[in-house]
Amino acid sequence: MSDRLDGTVALVTGASSGIGEATAVALADQGAAVALVARRAERLEELAGKIRDDGGTALVLAGDVTVERQAREVVERTVTELGRLDTLINNAGVMLLGPVVGAPVEEWQRMVEVNVLGLLYCAHAALPHLLSAADDDPRHVADLVNISSVAGRVARSGSAVYNATKHGVGAFSEGLRQEVTGRHVRVSLVEPGATDTELSGHNRPEVLEGIKKRFSGVERMRAEDIADAIGYVVTRPRHVAVNEMLIRPTEQT
Ligand code: NDP
View 1: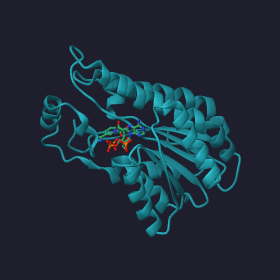
View 2: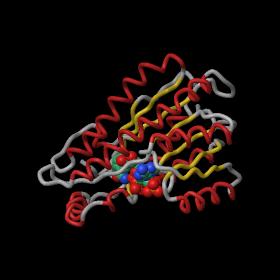
View 3: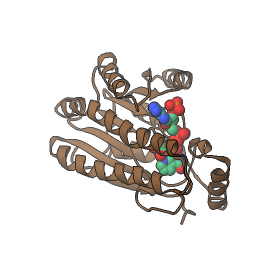
């Protein structure tokens, strides 16, 4: 049994491509009005156009989640313009891999800023609204979904700092879950494996080569596969909380 999202409002970070884009479409299909957040405004406008053409409601909010003020502003504008906030999909992320020894430290700074601080800023700004939505019609429950990774469960040589950021997301999610679940804000952790998106394209050429080699025989998941899982998580009846979901391509070891 699943609950549709009619009358609810969802904010998706990192909605300009990949998993975030597919998730915004999936939530709009379920009836949610969606606020689309990322830095590339033109990509968000294109996506909003598609959602509106299909009869949905979409609000474009260009912003950088690593700037605390901007993270707060996108949340506040969502509530002002769409009336409430029931669902936060904390999805924006970067993955810059490679050995620790000799790594460009600015890559670590970007990952910590986006994957950890950006996610925390959005959660902090959204929580008061999620708590009030959980008290309210139509569902009497709200959802905060943090997108981690298989890398948040298993550390590997060559991805230590990305592992550190995603393990951090897991720890934060569990601590926050215990804090707010009694007030019917469900905190969920979704941990995808290799998914065909723009994510690995930001790596240095020699690192990208290694990633390609590692996954050469693996049919990657599509962004829609993960959006489907997120859609499942946020449409459970009020008394069911999916705390954690680990999803790998069948061929990924
Ligand atoms: P993409 O690169 O396709 O999407 C990343 C999104 O994050 C983009 O929309 C990008 O938008 C946004 N983003 C990056 N930095 C910022 C920022 N500072 N402020 C706002 N938005 C930002 O990758 P995926 O869809 O694959 O990644 C989504 C999530 O899934 C990430 O957290 C990633 O770690 C996780 N994941 C992905 C896996 C995969 O194999 N693809 C596997 C496991 C986890 P813009 O550049 O326009 O700001």
